[in-house]
Image 1 (cartoon, rainbow, N blue to C red):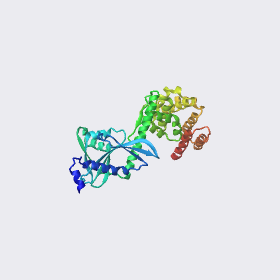
Image 2 (cartoon, helix red, strand yellow):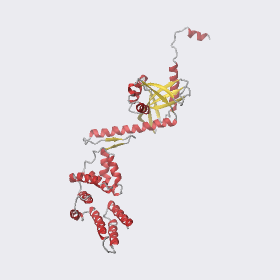
Image 3 (tube, helix red, strand yellow):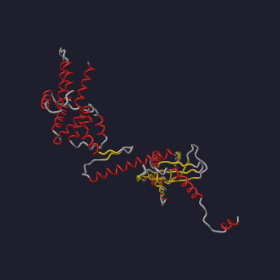
Image 4 (cartoon, one colour):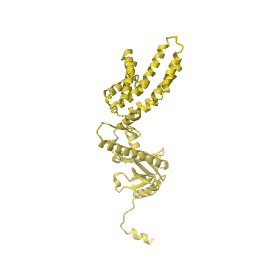
Length: 370
């Protein structure tokens, strides 16, 4: 055509096939994202390695939680035998994406199938490290794309970014709280699943509801909660008392004694009732492992017998010992007397749930051994 010959005579820029492929891939890529959940923002300076920052939306609200995408495209005619598509990536580019505090992904448009494939930068870096600890010294690496970017993959990206965003928000919040508070040496603990626990929260729970949890027979949960901390938790008398009681009921007598000894050193912090509990349990542990005599044990128990709450524990211990001692006698009423004493504790309105639970357990154990 005559019009075409006009352009043939002009010196004009030539079209770049790579640029055209990049434009095609972008035009197909963007509509994949649900506008009610994602906001796609193109990066102006793409030579650094990130093409898109994609923000999450939640119930029509912007979250400021992002993930990064580097979009690649290839018109290679052949895939690998396993169906994957190989792409050479510069190590500097890999490190750049790894430096992103939020999730980052490589996405590849493969013209041969007209489909997108993706890989998390963290999964790729993990595979490189497992293969060669010195992978950073090499100039480039091959990434074999095999996972298709479909609806389930986009949901995976959404959930991972949401999880990591909440995690980072919690970290920022807790770090800010610690920065303005008195420096207690408390630490923030993070596990592999981004679950966050801090010493202050663990201490608050154990001191606040630890005894109630024990009263429900869940002393192992108290010990588990303590072990989630950094080891810098047991700084108050009540905390040590609760942990001592939990270990006592779990049969960890040596650990219980250690906690009770620390609690005694700080016992001025305790109420009179808790001081009585501390004395009772510490004495019981010492007696159980043979650190005090029968006479010393009896003397301390007599001092506590009329105390509120803890007096029921003493009655229970006394009932158990009297029943054991009566086994060598010919008394026909020994079991009936024992049951009557146990039931009087269980049915007493002043007895707390912990002592009632213990009394019921003793009654059941005695029944089984008959």
